[in-house]
Length: 121
Image (cartoon, rainbow, N blue to C red; front, side, top):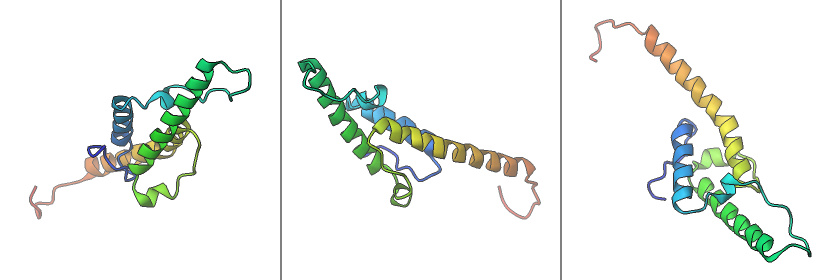
């Protein structure tokens, strides 16, 4: 976990990739790969109950990991969700467009810059 980047609002792609890698390496990515399972009932089998319990455990740990790798000033602006998959989807919808917008702005600035000879390269 110490090598995971902290999401600062500008590095979504890097953060997203590292979160998926770390959760996969820790074998906690089940909650990202599968939708929440149906609720447990009295007629649920042992396998269904154990699968549901495992999903809940992996989901809780995945959410904690993602929240730990987000800067505090951003963390407070993100709504709480019960699913790691929903949380990651919200982050992607909100910040991927911001990252693309920033990249476009920087590229436009870079391509319109002119060297005036007063500064070193």
